[in-house]
Length: 384
Ligand SMILES: NC(=O)c1ccc[n+]([C@@H]2O[C@H](COP(=O)([O-])OP(=O)(O)OC[C@H]3O[C@@H](n4cnc5c(N)ncnc54)[C@H](O)[C@@H]3O)[C@@H](O)[C@H]2O)c1
Ligand SMILES: *[C@@H]1O[C@H](CO)[C@@H](O)[C@H](O)[C@H]1NC(C)=O
Ligand SMILES: *[C@@H]1O[C@H](CO)[C@@H](O)[C@H](O)[C@H]1NC(C)=O
Ligand SMILES: [Zn+2]
Ligand SMILES: [Zn+2]
Image 1 (cartoon, rainbow, N blue to C red):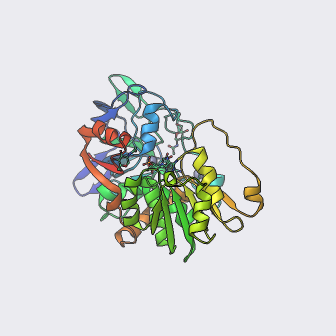
Image 2 (image 1 turned 180 degrees about the vertical axis):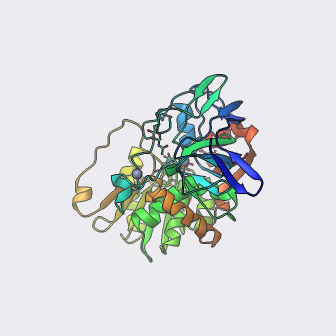
Image 3 (image 1 turned 90 degrees about the horizontal axis):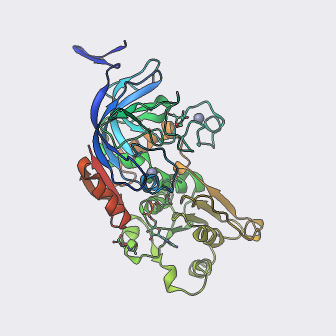
């Protein structure tokens, strides 16, 4: 048995099973069911976290719809803030009481992606949806059945267990109901501009798709000093918010008969340095590539590619000099960079309020997913 002395008189045992509430998905396309679950103590190199706030991301919805392979029953959720409740043997980077953000993209520090300064897709990420921790088992049970993990985080639960490489300590003063967005949506978009594209001051950028991630790309372009940021969306009611976060102008492809790449070239005197695909469609991936400057342009794929679809493109698009890139989690090294992003937020380098359209209680989680599917929310944050 391991005892952790947090402060005089307080002993936290890390071998007790916690009973708490979690939103369980029993099968594909079913609503969440709030259940009492048992959360096992953290094993060696694991951390048990009390979740404080968690955002609803489109990727959670991909698990429900089947667009992303997931094992059921499952506890989804991967964009959260919490407090460490207890730690397993050998954990050194966090201790009970620390405010933390769980990391759906771990940073083990040892694999080839982690060692290379330019890589971030850690080998310990659950890319195939196996839904277990590193020893091949789960820490959740409900009604006597094992419940699977999701993206190594499972934050739609009052308590969760993660690997030490899947959690990072953040500033104790950070507001949990805001900085949870740094756990996925915000960082993905902001990093695509700042870290992956490395947008330069004075440049012109075009962002395809003005959802929560696209808005975060715009914030990144603005922080990097872009002088023109053109937002593109089929839905014109997305324009107002895009302008509020930094877009200098917005257009809808519906208003033009000619290809959007020509429209952008004419608007900018052929000077679009950076484009971002933040929709997740093959057509917009090609449109975005064709829209950046033929010689020095860079285009970044941020939208999740539709599963098992292939793309055909004219290689001349690349031959002339364009750069085509993609990124997961904005290219950030999660454990190292998330605490820095939280500090940047506290230093008011960017604003997360613009992205949060709804705040809900945990029991109303199904309502949060309805808002998402109706396109009414940018980000809904759930308070536990
Ligand atoms: N790379 C990563 O690590 C990562 C992380 C999170 C999300 N994502 C992906 O980013 C994408 C965007 O996420 P989101 O939460 O902002 O989604 P969202 O659904 O809120 O936003 C998408 C926007 O694209 C617009 N749109 C649809 N078709 C369009 C078209 N043909 N042309 C222009 N605009 C169009 C929609 O009107 C909407 O405003 C998704 O594919 C998501 O899976 C990737
Ligand atoms: C993430 O999940 C996968 C499979 O479910 C597992 O192999 C891996 O070890 C886990 N990684 C972490 C950091 O928990
Ligand atoms: C367009 O966006 C608005 C505001 O975000 C939303 O209410 C509406 O449902 C969207 N329409 C479509 C067709 O997605
Ligand atoms: Zn996400
Ligand atoms: Zn790694």
